[in-house]
Amino acid sequence: PAKKKVHEWVRSYKARGIVVEQCLIAAGLQRIAPEDFIPEIDVVENGYISMIGYQAKGYSQVPMD
Image 1 (tube, rainbow, N blue to C red):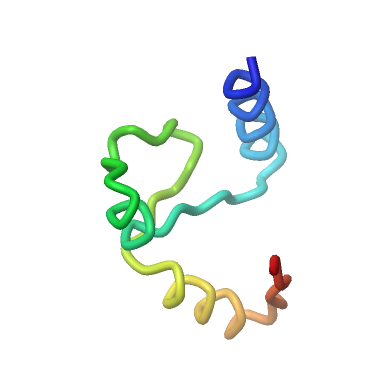
Image 2 (image 1 turned 180 degrees about the vertical axis):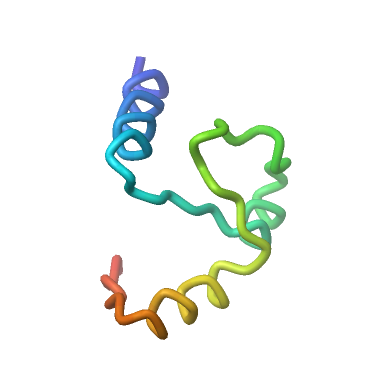
């Protein structure tokens, strides 16, 4: 049930134009194949590079620790 709810959230985010990205490096460390992610999640080669790109466009990083 929790997995289904998360899928619904991600789909609703995508429908509103919110981008959800998954770092392929981090996925690989957890042995999760790119094809295992739902289509609404954009898999990026390197999450750090992606964050740098967003910051260069004026977005701010939100610490999650």
